[in-house]
Length: 372
Image (cartoon, rainbow, N blue to C red; front, side, top):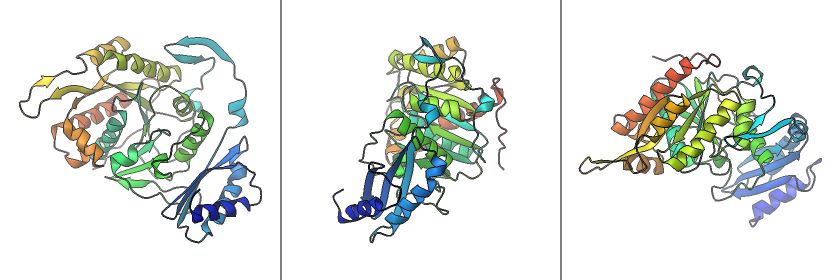
């Protein structure tokens, strides 16, 4: 806290009745916008909601404050309690003795389908695929939302060119921001982009759960979740608590990426989330001058893995400069040049994802209606 406004906000918060020392974390003030985390430890979030509102109200009264955003984080006693666990590891995924059934997972009101886009490792272009997949589904006439679940490295705000902060109309739920016809929410919209989220797993998963459930998504045909790399706490939390329709795994053709992609596939199967298929990103480089094709990361690896693991190969996205340039500019290729060859590859991917949802045999997928 280096600014007078930040110091004044901190002083105002310390006077809130019921607030203990250390509960306010990550307090930042930028352009009059205040963001902070209310660490409620093992308390009941519903019981602590009045305290959160009191903190927001106190901060709003400070001169120079234009908007306030506060997220509650903590770990419930149920999450802290020891759980019976089989001490075996298969493909890097801990085998739960009694994974929750799909019927026990909570749906999101108004959201017909939830699709997770994951990659076993970072650097495979998962977020770029997730954003362009969401845009392609929107082009097919569906109402689409996009949740950035990468708490530690959110990239959706940059990919969609989003500026500013989300607002709350009722003081209870955040309104998603909109770009290119999508509704989007990301932790990166609530904090300074240069500030690192130095949170332990339980705190990060609680923040993500609140971000997902306390956003006013409205009526959606599908919510695309851009998941973080790996197979950690956030993945298990989403897979076990939310009724996901299915998962899409992204990988490059190289062997080192496919090793981790297999772990991601195994994790989703272990927690009863249907695997819709795998996407080969950066499949082939096409020279813009002569048209020569070069399989920089190898050829056929993802196709062979999909066949071996009996999952569909949903799409092959080429390694092309326009995809990278439009992503960096905040106007993804499907929005920037919808008739381009690169955009058509993502539209084909979207069509295959819809087909895979219809064919999923682990449980019926929510009905998706194609709008005129």
